[in-house]
Image (cartoon, rainbow over all chains, first blue to last red; front, side):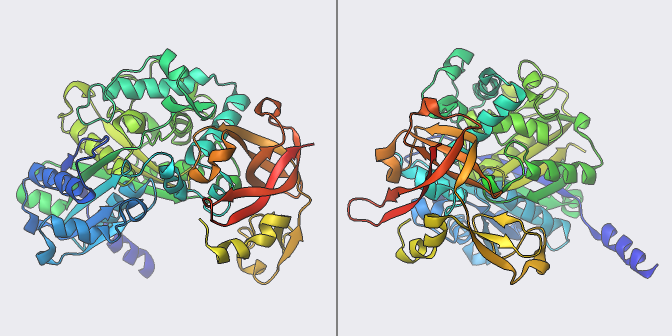
Length: 400
Length: 133
């Protein structure tokens, strides 16, 4: 009896968390902008958008994946705080790393810090500069998100692993290559309406099918680009939002799950257990199911991941996502998938990617997404993933 | 990728495919693990070395065209997930054949090969690749 009472108190003490501001830079090849400049630009936009002052911020979570290898810079939390002009306020500023899921991981930490009652206002800023390295050298760095000793050492790259998943999936479920390409076609169609997207050109199915091979059966149009960019969001407690009479976007739930680091260690190479379990947790905590979701931002670093994620997140049976790519996933289709342009066309600056998904969800739920606005929007699901699926983080957001 | 101690440390596993076998459930793990993910505490101190045959089948594969710098001279190469007869699945290249000859389900055996070299004066690193039976 006593323990159940204590549990009840604990549940009551958890705070609801709202996004009250969001900002991002353009994603793309931003050769004239440094790591720190990009981070500060996104952060300032988020702060202005939230109509708060930097002195209101109690904690900063930075997110970045490859800064040490590319820009010879670690301690990126301090770097961001310093050049945002808030070093003298001495607030905690820690960098979170979960490879390509770093951004969502940082938002989740900020969410938990407010949910726990420790803080009322947090900023989360993610940044990455992937174009600072010449030619194929970037592959040595992007391949560090895999198992370096037992995958990358033998010549595996992120694209190569995705390609092996794609080949087996296409064979076992009789899925045509066109179904994969349609994910990229959809991303580009949406990105053409997003001024911050890395690529704003529309992509025809024919071009998508016939681009240069990267790791067969995947070609260049199946792979997200190397992008620079930064994104930031401001999170606040229910108490703060009520006091200041702010209409934020509520984070309804957060789910996370790990899996084996290396693809070869997992029971299946086309079922993402991390995505399956993270989404189940998020749905359970939000008391929602996939049919309650109107918009998804997926982690489609490679087109094949977009398809299998739709399945593992609960939107299609295994092997059946191909039935969704013609109509359902389009902007204002049954479930709008990647209205931002997704990782393929909005871009994939690792540490900023997951936070960029939050920026998109915030704009959409505030009815500020311009030409790509999803009509009559309900709840939004965001999925971010590390490497070939070692971590998945799912958030569900709503206007509340 | 070229630290000498790192390469030396993994030599047995990469040269002879030495795996770890759980003394509690008999499951074989490669790369080696000190703790069995099924038996946890019951496996501690009971993981023993097992040299695998190197025989297996191709579970899936890709032809890699966009390659890291250390693999430039091998471009394009076939990379596969090979399901070994002792149980573990490993990631490795398929060599001594054209890409057209490779297919899911084909039988392979391991061969000892140069994997990569770190530039002109760097360490040459060796390990397993696979050839069609």
